[in-house]
Structure formats: C-alpha cells, structure tokens
Amino acid sequence: MNIRLSDGLAARIRAHAERSYPHEACGLLSGFHDKDGTVTVTGVHESANVTTRDPAKGFEVDPKLRFDLMRALEAQNDGTGIIGHYHSHPDHPAEPSATDLSMIYEVDFIWLICGVTKDGATDLNAFKPRDDRSGFVPLVAT
Image 1 (cartoon, rainbow, N blue to C red):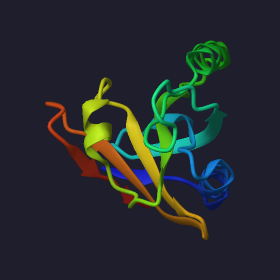
Image 2 (spheres, rainbow, N blue to C red):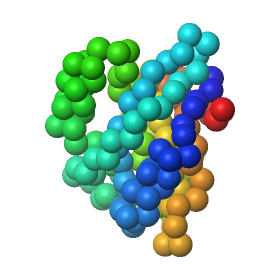
Image 3 (cartoon, one colour):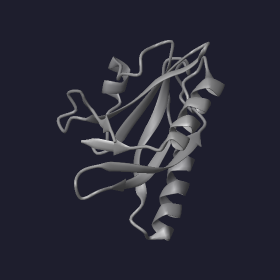
C-alpha cells in the first residue's frame, strides 16, 4: 500500500512534534483512498493530547476534534473522510511501539509516526494495522 503526503503537510506534523516535545503530539488525518489502494492525505488536524497517562509516553486525540471533523467532512460531501491519525515518539524511533500495538482499534486507520528529539523532528513513517491487529505494515510514500 502507498501513501501520498505533501511536503507541506509533513512539515506541519514535524513542527507540531517539535512544539510538543518532550510530550507526544497527536492529530487526525483527512483524505481519501484511491481505487489503486493508495491513501492520499489532504489535511492535518492538530489535537491536544488528552491522555490521562504520561503524555511523554502516550497520546489520545481529543474526541471533540474527531466528532467536529467528522461532521465537517460529511457536510463537504466530496468523499474526503478521516483516514487516520499521527503522533510523535519523543526520543524514540518513528516505528510502532508495543503501546501503539495495544491501541489498534480501527484497522483501516493510517498511523503516521514522527520521531522527535530535543534537536528536532527526525523520521516520519506511515503504517497500516494488520487486519488481525497483530502488528503494522509499513506504507510506501509516493
């Protein structure tokens, strides 16, 4: 599976990760799935990290943002929807963690993960959960 993410949207995710450091940044992704299976990200929607756990080691997207965004995208009626979310990994690689694995709920959601250190954002990688929730499959940027 492939993913399309513009340089501008990637830069917004990296900037959010840097501003949030040493806590995890998070947000939603809007876009669509092409007939060939490619996922195209058309919007990045920053969220407050509302986790009740340690925000340096976990994230939770604000449910109000999700509901508001769902309503706004449905009103557009152009096929755009919420296709996934992003979060950062402070001082850890941009790869799914055991915590991420335990948080898989929607297997059709794309996971973008941005590594970040005190020196700035590092890698930005995309993944899709396996249908059986046993792990993640890396996506290829196009």
